[in-house]
Length: 530
Image 1: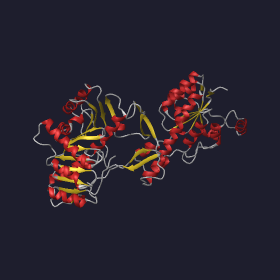
Image 2: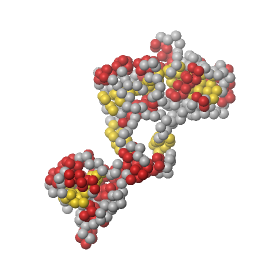
Image 3: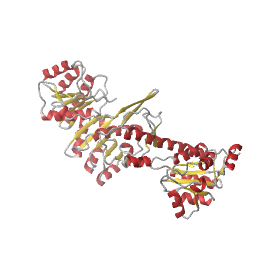
Image 4: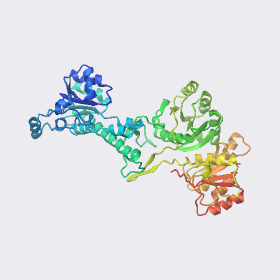
């Protein structure tokens, strides 16, 4: 028995008809009979091909606005028949069912329809029924039937037909079957997701539909012995780092993408404010600043922790200019992220061939909903995005001293940054610039001390009279369980504190703040980030 199956009859039903001209010409050159539906049949005739309408096979016209046209034994029998089985062959002969050797289908554009903001009725009408049914029938019976669901596979099919004199090989049919089932899986997942999240407003549905398409293989994961790839949703128009345009530079690694995403998430908090810059290292910000210009913002962010900035990720919330680009390239930088860049900036970066420049267009909305997924042994942890925000009116002053307007502004800035720092997180800030950041420690006191030590080091490096923590506000991502962390901030020179509150020792911490003359604000909201 040969693995080659002559392609005598093909059924084509396409929503997206790109590539059809070349495909149809190639099939016709091998004498393949073309059977088609609706608009695809009309297009094939326009191209000058002989086409049989699927209604000729079924004996029934397309009906109910095209909802019913291919759901018929003469179609599915021709797809599912096991041709070496005598009973199948006899049934096909008895009922006049002809075999279909090749199916070319792309489904109704459900994902694109949803992404375009269509109304509910239009979305429902773009749920394909007959298409997935034919795809599954053909792919199941890939021992005899080739099933194409992706235009990218058209050249491989035509090459296979040329190589084998108008027949398809089992090797190709097996590969196409895998692609076909992956397509129906992602299609059904998109439909289930729309019903759960958009139509019914569920945040954590009983079944989590999760289907992603590989965008690229990565060189390796966090370490060279780990494999890695980037996956994206099936729907077009991916935003953020995954959908960024890489203008130049080496291939992005797993760590580059992870760090770049951390930088962009924090930067998005400042998308509507003054020019701002975020510098990230190992998924933690090491400097954040607003300024009158991008160049000023970068310089202030860099000086927060110039040691950690080396080899880091730089993100800015305005199109890059040449002056800022030149400042960024004064040290080794892995990735630069911006909405856009002018010609002067592009020319500067072109001189650093290994630097990756990502242009993301519009910055993402920090308040957008969404899910975050983390794997654990035997399962997945799923939670909603931390898109919480505290309005000024929701801040509660718990100390005797009221904060000044500047202190409130500094507290809010520090709080915004602390949301994006790994717990335990402490952030000192003054005048829209981070003064010191302490991240990921096992206790909050050590985070406060590390952040203060970085500020002292910056003062020594740049010849300042005193560290920027003097007169700063300090943010803690979660409550101070003891007064020691707060006292470490006092030692660093902070004059105002913002924290969630809620500890059983709040009274002790408030008393320590009062004794030190601090103003302290409670948010009532925690921002753990693990």
